[in-house]
Image (cartoon, rainbow, N blue to C red; front, side):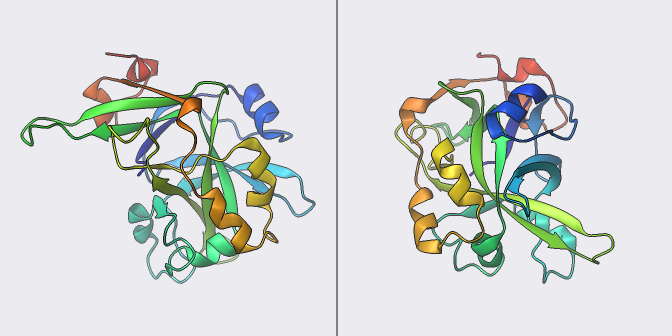
Length: 222
């Protein structure tokens, strides 16, 4: 799963890395939690890439209440093409969710002990690009835009920490993922664990477990 992540930019590097003309101005954030406004990159009508903000937690267009989004921050790769909440977005409304890194919690051998948070970051690039899905909910004149992160099985680096991880797309896969015309049989092979060689992980303070805590000290090794 992916329940917290980090995005501190800076904006200039985001623009360069994701080939967008500009990005919405957001403060550096070291503890992004579900229901927060997040940065997403999508394909514009002319084929160019556009960066904008959406709420983290996908609200299906048919939902009666947007509160359902609080439970929809992740979409499992194994069922993303069949689960009613996600299958329409997977078919034609896909996006990238940039991150400098993300957190995962390791369950201890002693069930009475507290879980240990870890920070995971890329080794050879400034950002991860999570595979994302997006939806529009509500009246056309005042819609709510939301997004979810697709998750998959853990790779060898993550297996000792957690059995799930975000789908992290390589740059060569971005255009196909963003293009709504890409056939689904070409999309499913992208939903695999990223190579462990492109990632590193270290334990961090349990302060990150409280979503109210913020700051670069949260990603420092303990």
